[in-house]
Length: 369
Image 1: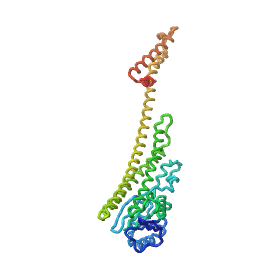
Image 2 (image 1 turned 90 degrees about the horizontal axis):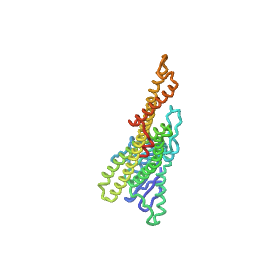
Image 3 (image 1 turned 180 degrees about the vertical axis):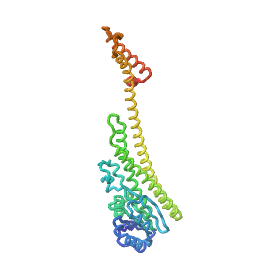
C-alpha cells in the first residue's frame, strides 16, 4: 500500500503515517485488489492503525468483490463508493464466450473496450483510500501528476494545483474515469453506422447477426452500468451536501458540489448516448426487415402479374388442345397466326389495364417526375 501526504504546497510519498496532520493536509492510501486480497485482515488493521476507523466486514467484502456494481454507502465514520471503470489494460482481449458456444465469433474492437473493473473509494476524515486493479492508468497518471507537482511548485501559474481535500481528489479520479467512457462514443458510433449501412444495403445480404446481437447486449450492459454509476454519484452528492453543507468553508463545499454535478452530467451523457445507439440498432433492424418485406411484396406482385398474364393464354392453348374433330381455325392456314395475334393483343390489353390500375410501377417514369 502506497501512502501520500498531500498539502497545498507539495505532495510527498511517505512510508509511515505522521502522528499529526494539519488542517491543510490529508492522506491518500492507495492499494490494489491483489494487495488487499493477499491478507485482508492485515490490510484492515493497517488502515485502522493509520486512521483510527474500523472497516466493517460487509464493506470489506465489497472491496474485494471484483464483480460488485457501482454503489454508495456511508456510516458515521466513513463513506464508501464503488465505481466500475474501463479495464484499459485488458481491452485488447476479447470477452470470453460461453463454454457451450462452439462457434468462433469476432468481437468488434469497440465492444471489447467495454470490459470494466471496480475501483473502491473510502472517505475517512482527512484520508482517502483507493483500491483498484493493478496497473490502473488513471490512478498511475494521477499519482505521477501529483508527485511532479512537488518539483514544479515554483514553475508559474500554469502549474495545476493539488487537491485540497480527499473528496476533491476522489472526484478528480472519478472524472478521469468517466471521461474514458466519453472517448468510446466515437468508435461505438462508427461501428453502429457501419452495421446500419450493411443492414440497409439491398445488394448484399447482412449475415453478421451474432455480432449485432453482441453489440445490443453490450450496449444494454453499458446502460445498466451507467444507471448504477448515476445512482451512486447522486447519493454521493447528497452525502457531500449533508456533511460539507454544515461547514464554514462554503467555497470548498460549493466547489465539491460543482465537481460532483460535473461527473454526474458526464455519466448522463454516456447513458443517453448508449440509449441512442441501442435505439439506432433496433431502428436499423426494423427498417431492414421492412425493406425485406417490401422486396418480397414486390417480387410477389411481379409473379402475380406474370401469372395473371399467362392464365388466359393457358386457357386458349388448353382449348385448342382438345381432341375434337372440328375446332374453329384448327384447319385454317392462317389460324396459327390469328391465334398468336389474339394472344399478343390480349397480353397488351391486360398490361394497359394493369398500368392504369397502377399494378405495375414505371420507375423510370416516376424518376422523371
